[in-house]
Amino acid sequence: RMEVGKLRTGCEEFDELMGGGIETQSITEMYGEFGSGKTQIAHQLAVNTQLPKEMGGLDGSVIIIDTENTFRPERIEHMVAGLSHKFEQDFDPAEFLKNIHVARAYNSNHQILLVDAATEMANKLKNTDKPVRLVIVDSLTAHFRAEYVGRGTLADRQQKLNKHLHDLQRFGDLNNASVIVTNQVMSKPDAFFGDPTRPIGGHILGHTATFRLYIRKSKGDKRIVKLVDSPCLPDGEAVACITTDGLCD
Ligand code: ATP
Ligand code: MG
Image (tube, rainbow, N blue to C red; front, side, top):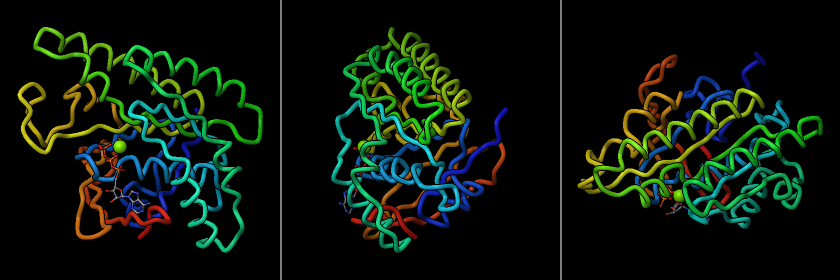
């Protein structure tokens, strides 16, 4: 087993909450309402992963499985500019964009297959100076939720999601990579998906994701990040800000 890496978020409180950063070889689930900032944080992590270790990165490249077409290259450019300010160094946004490999997933089966494609890509990059150190699935559950509607489909959906998460965990283990998945919660009770404060995916997801972060909006650009049910860290909250420059204290 390789030594677990820690990916810093750009927000010190957030890093402390996670015991120093987002771990590799683990799945970290971010769940929250629409607009809570899941995709923004995912973009920031796609940038930070590429930084050298002494700057809190993993010195690696990134794969994004984009299921909602919400990847925005210009956000990456803003965040790289933010890093240039922070570290007083000229980072090249084009270089960062080059190391983020985005794949659109058109439905849940395609999404599952893209983990195999990610594995191929990771094998290709394994012995380069930028091995894959982060895979993001944003959103993990949207396709499943749209496709599996009605009571009789629940067991089937959970089984598929379970397999998908195990594939992702395996990817993380084999590549010493962090795995980030996002999951929306409804602001209003949902007749089929039930309790609005629980993430879609229910129990199976609950047991597979090693770290679960509940993200919610606070005043202005502030976000509250809550660590829930961690097996090895105390529960707690952190305040982070989402600005044009990205995630910060
Ligand atoms: P969903 O569940 O719909 O996917 P999400 O949790 O992924 O939502 P995000 O898209 O990450 O939500 O967050 C959107 C919010 O991020 C915006 O409402 C805004 O507050 C903030 N945001 C987006 N772009 C910028 C920017 N360029 N500068 C500052 N804040 C931004
Ligand atoms: Mg989003």
